[in-house]
Length: 88
Image (cartoon, rainbow, N blue to C red):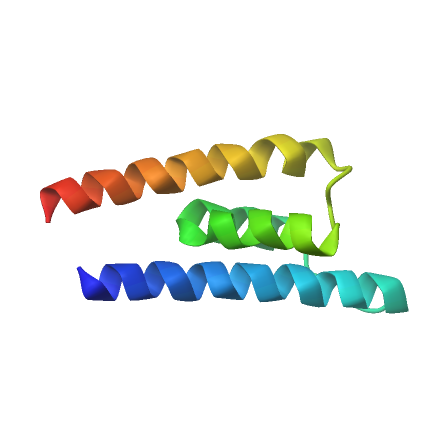
């Protein structure tokens, strides 16, 4: 169980940092992270970090797909964690 929580924290920390890095790259007009990477990361457990990164860095907040998709993935992640918690 501790490994599950640790993995979840690492994924979310990575999502948060990746959102900040992408914002910095956007401001410099340099290479960016594909949106599909953010959605895959969100689906596999990093949605809270991506969502917090969106808010903290004010990045991708005008994209409808992110405004709707990331909160849906947050709900999915929390549901999945709850189910795993009950099973384990």
